[in-house]
Amino acid sequence: MAVLHASTSPCCTISLNRSSHRRSAGNLRSFSNQYLLGRRAAPVSGNCKPAEDASSRSVIVARSLFDNDKNGNDIGDRIIAALPFLLPLLDGLPYAKFIMLQYPFVARAFAPVAPLMYIYHAFPFAPFLVFLAIYNGIVNNSSLPRFVRYHAMQAVLLDVLLIIPQVILNDVWKAPSDELGLQAYILAYNTLFLFTAVCSAYGMGSSLVGLTARLPLVAEAADYQVRDF
Image (cartoon, rainbow, N blue to C red; front, top):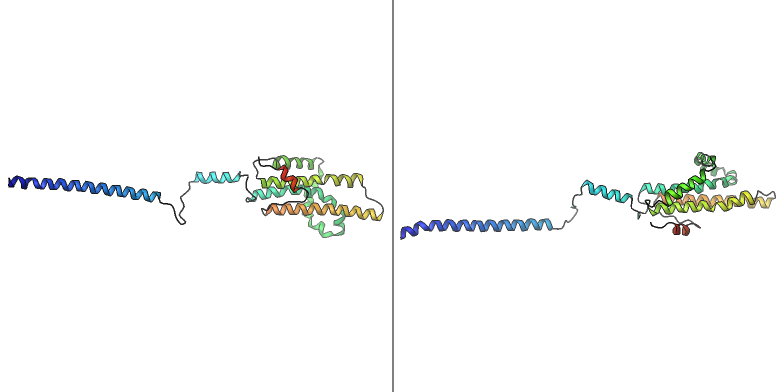
């Protein structure tokens, strides 16, 4: 009986040791899984940011290029918004003939624009075609930001305002012969040119620096015409 008890005791001890090892290994495995899950679920702190793949970055860049809520953050949009102001400037330069004769530095300041003005007025339908290109290609282009379309609409309306004084000064009110009438005629020319040049320069400069310009007489109408599509 003593021998039997002595022979069976090691087996029980070995089996108990194996079962305890299994339980400890299972507890260690569950603890490691919980630890790893906790590490995965832990929030990212500090400057550590999850890595983004190339496809997600390209989608973000493509979305930003066609975002209609941008306010002049892109240099390309600023240039496109500034270029339409050349239209009223070129149509207003013919009214600078008296002020350029009186102040030659004004003529020198606008000398770089002279070749463009010559090409612009060389063809009979060139001003009308440029007008249609700006209105249909920029103002009514829903893929462009409102910042671009709004400034282009102001440039178009500013150019439309020149039609009435152009008809009056060229067809109705000819250059008078008396001195008082001639002075009023020259004053009308100078005022029209200065108004157009200052508005065009202000709109172009504001567009290039990313600011929204609101020009007199045309800002409210441009707000009404340019809507978010």
